[in-house]
Image 1 (cartoon, rainbow, N blue to C red):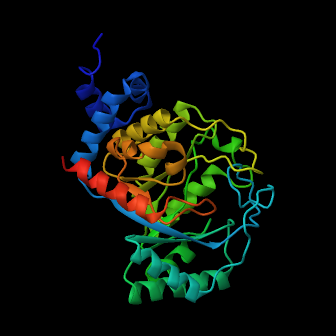
Image 2: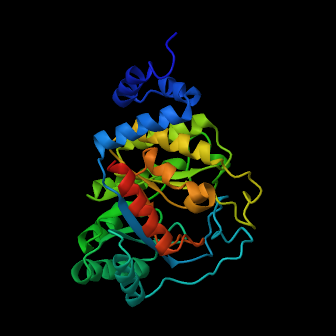
Image 3: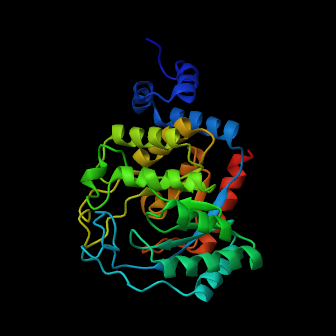
Length: 323
């Protein structure tokens, strides 16, 4: 039987061609440092040194009717997060300007809840149009389960990318959400692609799922041919059903990033919530393991690192990538 790393070149080629679940499992037994090296080679070959920086706005917060167990914004849970209606157009546009000012190349408008009213959708479409015309930053949105006609309206207003996570694997999904189905999420993703939008779709790791669930999620994203994959690492929030889940280890998070890079090869893999909490002073490791994107300026309900710390990390990523 071949030993690591002699078996790597054959396995990497096989996975990049087929992404079959059985051969991906082999990587669960790989020495982590060797796996990091191989994932970094895949990144260099298919992505190069492009680092994508995004910033998001929590444009409508809390009071969500859905029961996603990880989410602090569900009205069914008892977390202490602010609740407010949709921000007005001026607030959204101003936030886009701030995102550009801090170095983001993409600005995401995010709303709680699974649906928007027509009035809310029109406010967002007007804001998207003004941001595109006057600020010049690419605009993304995460607005729940929209219909194709609504997504087309946003595309015509200037939206470039739609974000809609699948959250986890099809098998594990009912353990996390019961108020809407995995297939409903897939339908929205397909509508966004049909509307001509790029699609940003990922999920959360560390919710109690198995390694097979993570692999299945990556394979689903490959099949959907999404453009960008945000990986969130669960931050257990008091008042949610997952508040007592043991945090994922940094090494398991890194191994997951490696596997996602090898499966998804040329897609942006973006480290989102949990980056600071899980990796702490070892955040650079994620970006030598295949990640090539990050959120800056904070998250929806959790504060991120200060900008100076993120800027220092960005410079370190660029330095190590060019060595």
